[in-house]
Length: 407
Ligand code: T4K
Image (cartoon, rainbow, N blue to C red; front, side, top):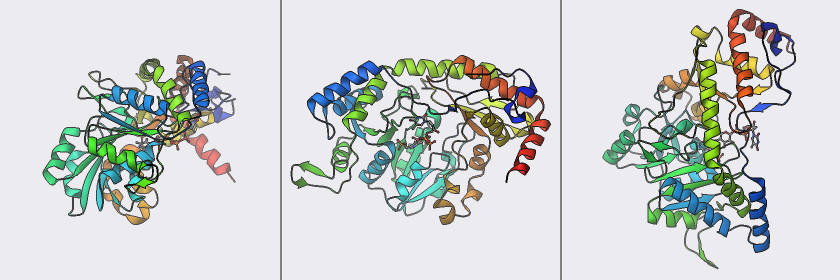
C-alpha cells in the first residue's frame, strides 16, 4: 500500500506510517516474459546442457554482439570476472588509471591481480573520468587506462584514446551501466580494445548474475575465450592460464528473456526519468542529471544532485527522510573507491587529488526506477522530498533528535 503524503506531519520521520509498506529498492530487477523464460529452461533441461558454451549462451552472445555492433561477445558469469579477464588478457600490469567515482569492482578487478589502481578525479559535469587529469598520473609503470561510462553516459573516449596512443597505453572501458547506449552516435561496445558489460540482477537487462566482454579484436577475443574456461582448447589440452568465468545456461535463458523486452524496459526507464524530472523541476537545490538527447541512453539510473545550501538539507538528511518512508534510495558511489579498503589504507592521501570526486560523491542520490516503479510511486517519492524541503530546519532538528535517542 502507498500512502500519499500531503502535509508535513504526514512524514514518517515525525511518527506517521511510512509512505510504502514494502521497501522500495534501487535495482529491483526487470523481469521479462516468464512463459518465454520457462520455455527456455525446459529446452535447457531437455538438452541436458547446463553450462560451458551451451546453445543459450551462444545465442545470448550473438544477440549482445549484434546489439553492440561488435564482432565478439564473450559472456561471463558476472561483470567483475569479465573485467578481471579483460584486464589479464590485455596484459595490464604495474599501474592502471581509472576514476575513483565508480563501483568498487572496477578497482578490485585490478587489485585482485596485484595491479595498482591509480585513481583519477572526475569531471563534475559528466561524473566521468576527467581526461585533463590523466597525464599527470602516468608513470613508467602505467600500462593502461580504464574509462567508466557512468550512468550510461559515455566518458570522453576521444581524449582518453589520444592520451593512450601517445603514451602507448591500452584502453579498456567498464561499460557495466551502458549496454544499449550510444556515445557520439556510436553504440557502446566498440570503443577501446574492449568493453565490459554487466548483466547483474540490478541492471536493466539482466541474467541474474552475468557479464560480458565485447570487442572487435579477434586475437583478444580468442585469448579471453580460453581464459574463461581454464585455458582449455580441447579435452585434456590447456594452452593458457585460465579461470572459471563461464556464464551458465540458466543465466543465458534469463538474459535472452530480458533482451526480448529490452525496448520496453528502456521505455519504462525513460518514462520514469522524465516523470521524476517533471516532479522535481521546481524543487530548489535538487537537480536530476541530464541525458544527451542526441544519444540513445538506457535511462537505467535516475540520479539527482543535492545542493545543500540551496535545498536546506544535505544529501544524507534527504536519504534519512526517504528511508523513514521505506524508500531505499542509494548513495552510489559514495564515498568513492579511494575511501574504501584496501585503497584508503594503501593511499591515505588520495583524496587530496580527488576534490571533485569528494564533492560530487557527497551530493548524489540514486532513486528507484525500472519496471517495479510506476508514476504514482514517483509522485509519492517526490512529494516526500518536496514536503521535507518546505521546512528543512524542522527536518534537521528531528533527525538530530532521533540520532540522540539512539542507544
Ligand atoms: N562496474 C560498474 C561500474 C558497476 O556498477 C558494476 C556493478 C560492476 C562493474 C560489476 O558488475 P557485476 O560483477 O555486479 O556484474 C549493485 C550491484 O550488485 C552491482 O552489480 C552494480 N554494479 C552496483 C551499481 O549495484 P549493491 O551492492 O548495491 O547490490 P545489491 O545486490 O545489494 O542490490 C541493490 C538493491 O537491489 C538491493 O538492496 C535490493 C535490490 N535487489 C537486488 C537483487 C540482487 C532486488 O530487489 N532483487 C535482487 O535480486 O551493488
